[in-house]
Image 1 (spheres, rainbow, N blue to C red):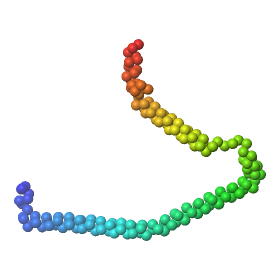
Image 2 (tube, one colour):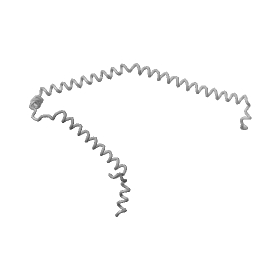
Image 3 (cartoon, rainbow, N blue to C red):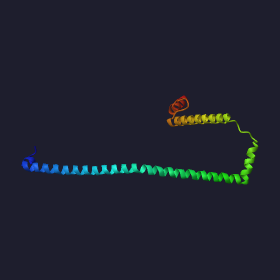
Image 4 (cartoon, helix red, strand yellow):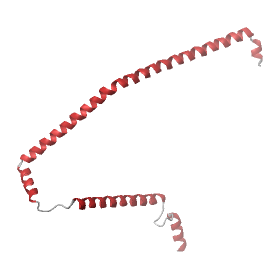
Length: 155
């Protein structure tokens, strides 16, 4: 123990320790009260959110239905106007003539599948080439700096 502690009488040290304990206890109780208040606020917020789920979902569904009906109405209006216009009637008559036969469904599906596969292959090739360029590799999986060193050493 230090000499300063010996100079303070034991009753005074006990009183100081009790005072510090009371201060710490009051801080702890305030912190617990704040946490309890926040817990109640979170519980209220959760209960309020649960109550609002149904009205919000119905509102979103209603808005989506209105947008869908509006889009359908606009589409029908445009289609009706096209049918009534001279251009629409002429294009419809030309389509009925079937001057150029459309390819079969099987051929169209085959063409789309082939085109998709070629697109995927080209994309993968571009990714690999880009990665090799960024990593500094050449086509033979040699590093560019090694190949340059070998090339300059041979000359």
